[in-house]
Amino acid sequence: MIIIEKEQFANYIRQYERLIITICLSFTKNYFDAEDLAQQTFLSAYKNYEKFDGENFKAWITKIAANKCKDFLKSPAREVHSLEEDDYEYLKDGEDLPEEVVVKKYNADRVNNLCNKLKDPYKSVALSYFCENIKLSDMAKNTGQSLKTLQTQLYRAKKMLKALWREEVI
Image 1 (cartoon, rainbow, N blue to C red):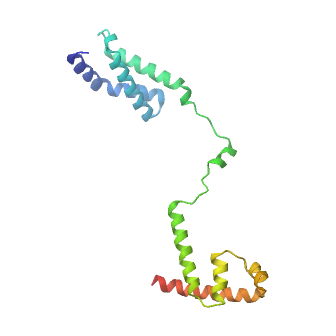
Image 2: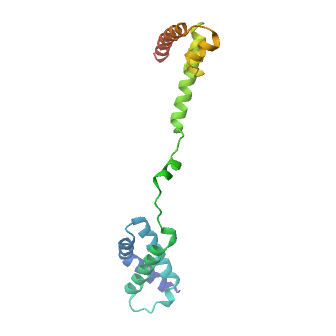
Image 3: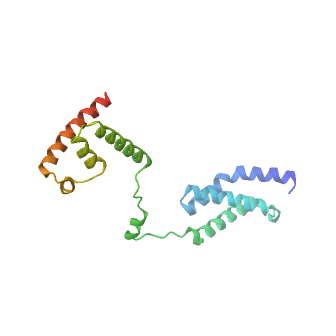
């Protein structure tokens, strides 16, 4: 393609760019697909410019655009498959967001540090309950202490932890 024809082709692109995007948009109903197809249309026209008879560029380029859109709509890659209701379960992300993971880790470390500041027996009850997730009933079985005693110790440990938590914030 000689320089004059390249300049003429560039003029054609500027002149018909909106028309081609509008045609592609009318076929696809999606602006991004329309832009892609418009680019493909102009690329195809550029590659095959020597086949252009010089008569009516507008008719020639709109015919290319329409054919590109028809091919796109028939494309198996464009086929949309619906998921069944059960399939959505596999797509769910069960993990926490990274920010949530960091906050949970920070709070867990903070609770652990505060529990370690308590004196026994409150320290051991608080560490077991809050940091190791051991139920009071299991602690009673393992230690031989009464459940009521452990409940009282945990109640007092919570009050002390609440006070320590506030002191750290201030």
